[in-house]
Length: 391
Image 1 (tube, one colour):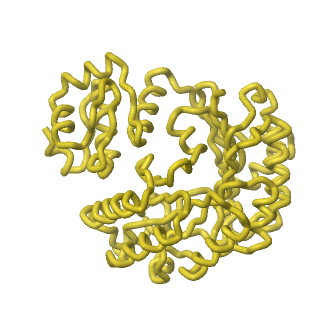
Image 2 (cartoon, helix red, strand yellow):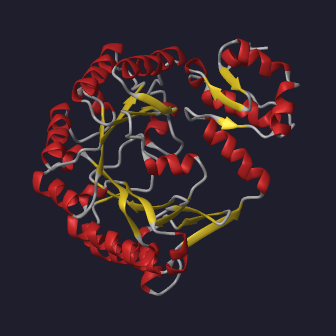
Image 3 (cartoon, helix red, strand yellow):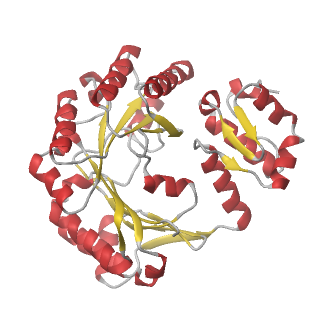
């Protein structure tokens, strides 16, 4: 059976973090019920997709989906199951903020069928959390994790961020130590990036925020890979680590070209070779659906070449790598830099399967761009200098 997933965007959040570029809204509690109704209406409008089902994964992302009541999440899940079908063993993930941790609330989410909880703890140091604009403390993160376990969640992901401006290396070491001591089933580690349009971007432009150096960023990423591997975690994607049997099935589908429906504010879908996306204005989103109109804001058709390029790019970031077509392999083998990448230990080639090594993962974006440029037979794009030296 081909995997088919549903992404549900819940934009409501207790705060808009200064580094966040996602479509989120603070306040607006008066819109919660109308928004949930609109999402359910949107799901029902995709009834014709039922033959692609049943759904194998559902992911409630945001924003902070845990700000909704369990009953509101249940309405969305019930609508999805009735409209598209839902496998009995479907992976159902809900993102939660430690500041919303509550025993009854978490138990409610578990009781309605959510079987995977993703906690955005981000750091285990209060000074770092303050820099990130988070409302919770390190103690709150500990409490949220314990609450998730008490509620019966046997599959918990912890999101953490490294390369926080001004944070000494010891803070990241402490965060890694706490992760390993708690033993969640899954860990997602992200390097802090300064996204255009965020408050961090504004502060950086004003000289009030100094991004971490490439050297310190590489150190933090390497330490995460070493520490988590030693603790028994498999790094199955650039930013994701899992204990055996606990890879994110929903995200694995993204990386391997599975179709998915995205509903809610600014949500994206990939269906029948088309990428679609919704409006990013919440009142407009609700009004469209209440009027029986589509909330779609645009779409694009991926031609075969573009689809293949995206497939190579995404799969190259996973532990399994990508299987090259014969023509692609021939093109790369006649490229001197490709041999340099292999000899430098940044990539491995086994018959036609191409993988990044652990060292190569440090330069995943740069290497991916180089490989795609070669496969497109165009001039190489500018990449970081430490890769350009490979010949």
